[in-house]
Image 1: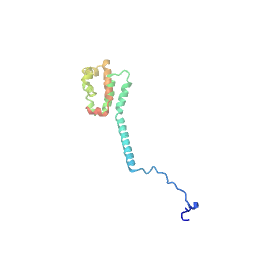
Image 2: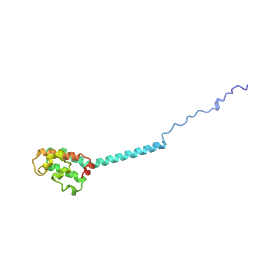
Image 3: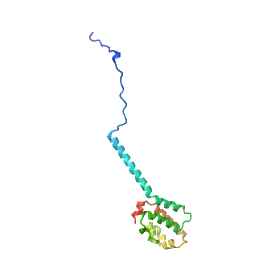
Image 4: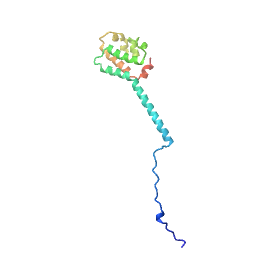
Amino acid sequence: MSGLIQQADISQLKDIVEPPSASVLPLATPIWIILIVLIVGLSIAVIYGWRSHLRRKPLRYAQQALNQLEQPTVKEITFIAKRAALVYFPRQEIAPLSGRTWLEFLGANEQQHAELLANADRLLFQPGHSDWVEQYRQLVADWAGQSPRRLTRHV
């Protein structure tokens, strides 16, 4: 009986062994490169954001101080603004500014602040001009709301 199939002895068969599951690590080289670039990019973004936050700190304090004033005077507003300006500019540039030049330094222009600029000396050196004090406070608040880079660009 040559055509008969011989049966294998079952005791000699070995169990089927499953291969180990695929490991997550080691990752392929492109995945490592993408992860490294992502980590470096996030680190740079965090450092840039933190430095920007620290650079704006004096301006935030100035805005906070302005908002805490219930009945601001020109002297108080000017003190807050000059204190913040001294952080970003040398004393030699800030100290001589007064009157119209101080208002122009803060960003006053003829289109929006014509009355304030025309009466700069009366506003800054004579008390009792409450209608202009609010305009002046708003001018300083707008100035303090700018980014430090923009502040140092125009001077």
